[in-house]
Length: 376
Image (cartoon, rainbow, N blue to C red):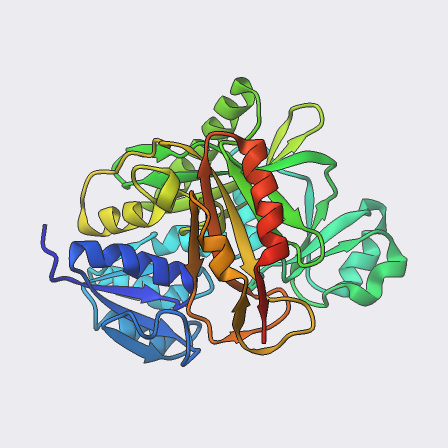
């Protein structure tokens, strides 16, 4: 292993920050590209470049500066990555897989072509196409590109809701009455070896449409767990790329499983692996970049991860109230993302709770939410 290689990361948010923190254990040199001059990674990477991730020349020139390249966000210029790959640069995940995943229309078509269970959908060019498909409602409209953390998704009950519809290329996805949403993180070395973390159960904040908390392992039957892992593995096998992939699935009321979407990177649903598993999702990503064996995905305890988000009505320089009280409790680990500015619903950090009683951890998370407030 050579630890003097320069690892380039496209995106400077909290996922990149946690990746760099893990990379420090291996003595890696890290370069980061992000359009935000105050991105979370800025002060902990070896070189920080301000630039547009969607601009061909910016991404291409950044890639020429590094020995290996990875991502912490999928909204990047894939054409630049394809050119860099053709010139011999190792990129994880493969640009071909990234091209499918970053476009929800291509992603849904990929599921259909490979007999991967997913909700019925229609491709739309604009809002007018939505009106023509009113018989498909109620449904979720999702922008094909640039959506994240619940943004770019809206529920359309009927034609009276058209004012909130997107007037762009999108998909219309049939509403599915599910009981739970679960996620499986899959590690692929690109050589046929796959490893899956235990499925986790996601509970969403209805106001901001992002994860409120998750529990690991998910409270599901062993048969459902096995099926979820098998589906997640099939998704990644068909993508045929090394990398870390988060496969999100809906569990229906009749125990049917449908793939919601896939992320080609470390994911919010894998943060708890830092404290809860022998090898975290970030350790796995570093291992892949260095050509090291896949680490153990085994959990050594139950865990709960809760997102810390900005309080409603507060925007400005972040202040953390009650953090001392929370950190005085055993089994609680606080991760702050280094974001200077807070705003309502913005992810500012997360907390992992380790234990052996899931219900007790859920009660702890409720108490933490009452104590720890992020204001300005």
